[in-house]
Length: 415
Ligand SMILES: [Ca+2]
Ligand SMILES: [Ca+2]
Image (cartoon, rainbow, N blue to C red):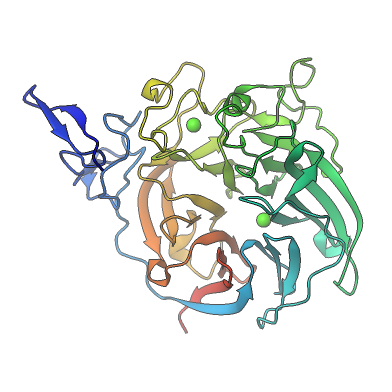
């Protein structure tokens, strides 16, 4: 690259090494249980000299044996940058397309016409029509929720709207915007956003900090929704037990703070909420989200700036800030997450599946007692950016891929 850095060797001598080349690629890693193993990740980390806060926080063991016994079928093609897939109770799918269209894809793969009534989106950059979620009572209320980049005076922002799918499924009715991320900003990056309903009936929404260096501090500011998880009642009102209720300096919808750009959010079988956050260069992280906690960005993070400079002096830990349960350096660029609970793949129960945009694969994490004990990468042979992963009622996994001619895949037991 033409640059060099100075590294202190074990001998205490100074040696020049090209950026991005570590003296010793990791070949073994201590695990959460104290054993050593061969980690799945063998590339050099981007950030030199950073140490995990505990064993098993990064570079987990390659899961053995490799998953077999599944097959992938392409349910549909020709989807324009699909951002979310949501299985419907009858076996069909709701799919968002980033340019601003919501469609139903039938179980047999027929791609329906765009559903009417979707508000306009700002689809520049990373913006557009983003996530979609079904009301917990969808079978009776036909209500859906979606997030999108809302064009606004002075810029844009992530908003969440709800509407009722008409009986003929051609139109959204009674559409209303129930939440707007503030402040508005004139940019095209880091919108978040995923939606997840908790067992408490509340809607959890992730956001982004808009990427711009001037906006980063907002991730720590309670008077801003940027870089947060928020928790709202499905009608858009604020739950009375949110953590910052009653503080004049805080937006009451905030649930957690200090996150960068979160496009993956999922509840596990025990009702715990997890996010997978886009970090900077070498700082993607899995977080267990708990009420009112601070996840550190931008004051504490793994990885480095895209320029190679350290972030906040390279600080990976600070008082009062949560450690990620796991992090990736180099990054995977996570989008979409699903805790597997189906009967189709008993060996996958309790695994967390995560879409990888950058590495074009599906990541599976084995998680035991709140620690990541194994990592496996699937579907890399297909070479497509994976944007979202969801489990169907049949126990199959459904995936959409991020490209102009995007695809919907079904992962089911091999017949
Ligand atoms: Ca969704
Ligand atoms: Ca963090």
